[in-house]
Length: 240
Image (cartoon, rainbow, N blue to C red; front, side, top):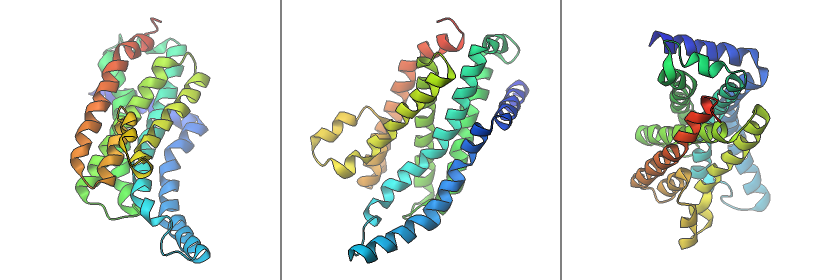
């Protein structure tokens, strides 16, 4: 555990030296302020201008989903960029043969950031939420968001040969989040074409007010991670 802790501290020092990654970590806090103040103000403005009783309000639950996946996406993006740099500098392989070992290295670089992002979401979401959420919903949504962040990080690392490609693939993988909007805009069976994405089932759970839809969300997330795992490990070790 001490080796994992020290390795994680090294990750934080790396982020502190990179202004872009440092800003990324504060993005959820800035977004929370926007949710708290700007979106309700925008709703009032639009209702007054369009003479409607509600404009954005029906989509408040969907906006909550986007927020719960924001912190994991940002944190895991930062972790993925550092992993790619360490792979390019051939330090990842050396770190994995120290007492840290492979499991410790991956725990400090991916698992801990995802867990911290989950906690971060649990803290911020009650203040950012545009509609009422129970503590159980906040926890489950945060866990689902963390799993989505891990998938994005694994996909980025597995399919990128450098940091520039990694940034491009991260942007593409972040589009997976949009699958959560399908239950709001696709009302027939065609929406299930997106059922391979964990975020789709999170959207389904919120749209239908049924937390049981989170079980297929967790299951599909596990399938994604299992599918990426072997290539991810080879890429980290620099064997490709």
